[in-house]
Amino acid sequence: MSKSFQVSRRTAIAALAAAAASISTSASAEDFELKVSHFLPPNHTFQKELARWGEELEKASGGRLKLKLYPAAQLGPPQRQFDIVRSGVADISIGLTGSTPGRYPVTEIVSEAYVAPSGGTASALTSRRMTELMPTYLASEYPGMKVLWGMVTAPLKFHTARVALRKADDFKGLRIRYAGEQFAEVISALGAAPLAVPPGETQDGLAKGIIDGATFPYEGAQSFDLGTVVKYSMEPGVSTATFIAVMNPKKFEALPKDLQDIIEKSTGPEMAARFGTALDNAEKAGREYMVAKGVEITTMPPEELNKIKGRLGALLEKRLDALEKGGKPARKFYADYIK
Image (cartoon, rainbow, N blue to C red; front, top):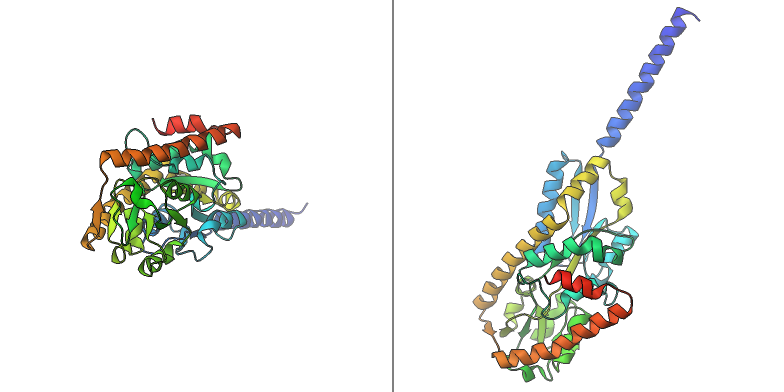
């Protein structure tokens, strides 16, 4: 073999190695933009916290990983938020479990009336607790999705346009917009008629008298500007709304390992608690907004509130029994959640 051929061969090998290294470096340095969907308005706490998360991901990745947010159901209606992640329309979404009743049955236990950990109803606590229990009890309810974290709102209040709720029987005959099938059961058990009204149409429905009341946490009532159309809000709240942040697993697996690690480190119980804290702050601000709009905060005497709790407690037992008969670890999850 001639010396010149050996030199040429070594040169070619070196060039190929350099090209391969260049391709590898280029691939690892590729930029990625993830589509993030939710159905709440752009002024909602979720939008603000997702934007904050996006800034953190971009900084941690040196600008290689970015989020593009699609609020207000741009990519799909509330009941499709989980499906659009499974299908790949969105890469990440925050879905409301109550919008598809019966699909996530163990998760829905969290939203039963007066169910909360012994430490209280603060969203920072309830969101963290639910997320901590996900690997054991809940993740299997979300096939085709990678669960990132969960969020539990403050207990939803009854906001009414014309009738103050001061006694258990004051619910009778009212038409109330509900947030999920469980709240429909609650409303029916109290003697009112549950009506399915999209969140964005609630204000108009109240103003026109199509509905007499609606169920929202204060932060949600502020987001949809209900303080302009209701006169009363009843405390304490009754049931919570449960949201789950999920990601398309194929999209996650297609990311370079270092970007996967960044996502993993930024999600889970800590992120749940952070979103929960933001919800708690928004709940306080929402209550202040309602009072500033002239809304009267009403309460019931203990004996009247106990009547409500008695009627609604039967719904929880009925759900737990049905899930246990179906082979679900309902009572174990419930016991661990309320510790």
